[in-house]
Image (cartoon, rainbow, N blue to C red; front, side, top):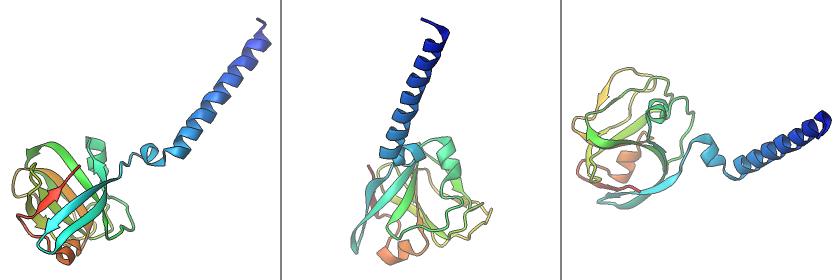
Length: 156
């Protein structure tokens, strides 16, 4: 096979790969962005409250969290999964939205809620107990749904 034919063949193969990747990304935008939306349900005295959430399950995702987000729907949030129960602490650096942070034990029981956190603050917000998950939602959500310590969250 001549050099020119091999070169054309290589270009055709490369173009096919680029088209395939582009099609995969077009039909899988959430996987391409790193987001994995899922439904969780928060159980309070006022009833069941479903949320669509993104999961932060590795160090890079947990570090970025909701930083730089300008808006968040009232029924949307982010769940940080630390895989095992441990003491955790959050801050609001580079986060322009006030949030409620719900610290959750591995069994889904709410341990503590940091309500209406201050945007851009670097003040640590500790879990106050060993937790596996932290749910971040727009500030005021906990009050709106009547969420208190001891309530349950159905995750995954």
